[in-house]
Length: 114
Image 1 (cartoon, rainbow, N blue to C red):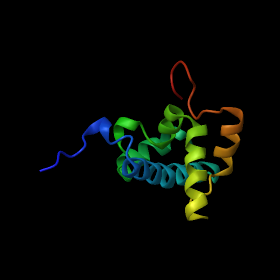
Image 2: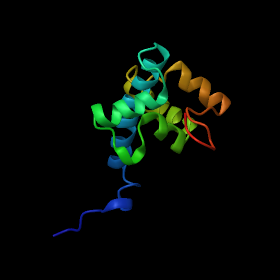
Image 3: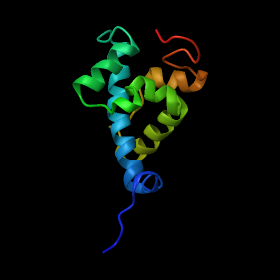
Image 4: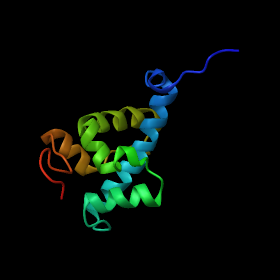
């Protein structure tokens, strides 16, 4: 019987990367578009709604906090890589593209979150 990979051993695997990118891409991009359209009042509202409403992993803090944690540039790069193979499903929201260009964040880097 073969040992199955555990925890951080999965991080380098293609399956883990795909699942993480798909989940983050679909949820984060959708949340950003909701913020842009005024459906969400703030990133915090989106994070709370995603954790309690659609099951976003609470230890990641919600999609907006997750983008700030991994870096918007990383998120945009992953969405662009997925979009090359699965266009147009993973086109990054304009706000994400602008934030990647300017190194923006949804929450302050220091101090108390909004």
